Length: 149
Image 1 (spheres, rainbow, N blue to C red):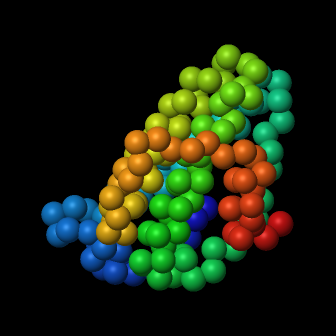
Image 2 (tube, rainbow, N blue to C red):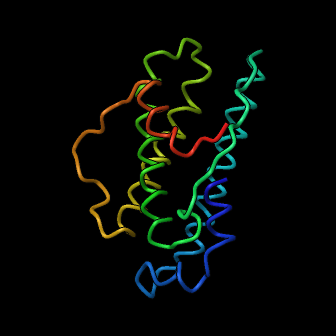
């Protein structure tokens, strides 16, 4: 939802200016968006196939982060970092082994997203040798600024 809104709202030329000329930023952001949609669908399908009920998606308000190119990329990097730490924090609690392969494969792709977006923001994509896992309450606290309902 975040990427869909940002890509729709922000001028394509403004997004392209975030990276070097030879790197098609908008195309890469579209790939990240498509990955995020696929991740959500895959997790929901996996949970349902295992007899569970996926959590409904909340309503989000991303404010000006889906209107300003630099804020969009910085917020995207922060959200990806939250996702990476959420998967790492949840991993020890996974009781059903069938959930481990999709969770780990999504986790590694989320880390690549975060690295790419940090680089677009002018930061080093891999600032630390280890990422710290976050608990559910820590993740919710970080994400709560965007959750309306």
